[in-house]
Image (cartoon, rainbow, N blue to C red; front, side):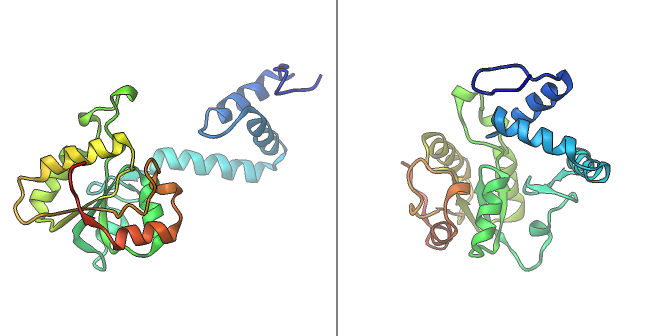
Length: 211
């Protein structure tokens, strides 16, 4: 008995089928790829398999989120926030951890970050209180931040979130609020932008204006 993804034929092993279903639940992984990954793990030696499972277990058990910027970290304070070589007075606001990595890859930014954990999206059930916006406002006030860069997706949800944050930050005098230059196409997420375009968008950031 063979497995055929297109015909929907069942896998001849419930254990294998369960593994495939779990792997296929990952973003961007289809059943065909999930089956290939599961079979690869099944054929791997005990040492490699144990190492693989150990890495995943450690990821869930030992990972932290930086108490200041909310990016993933091995410690309570991430290397970027704890670095004396970063400009601690400039905060780049991003949607997720992938955006931090995308901007860091450009090597064009030397400030710090604030990860919101999403953008305002009522259709997806994501409201203001689900994001790290209040923490950003508190951080700006307590740390005497000089510039906030709004580097959110150029989507309706991203723009709505930027506008809301801008309103919340208007209470701080002399705070500079900027946004990345629109070298990023409308509707794009930062993690998919090429490094040169993203880097120039950071360097050539402009004052934020309500859309």
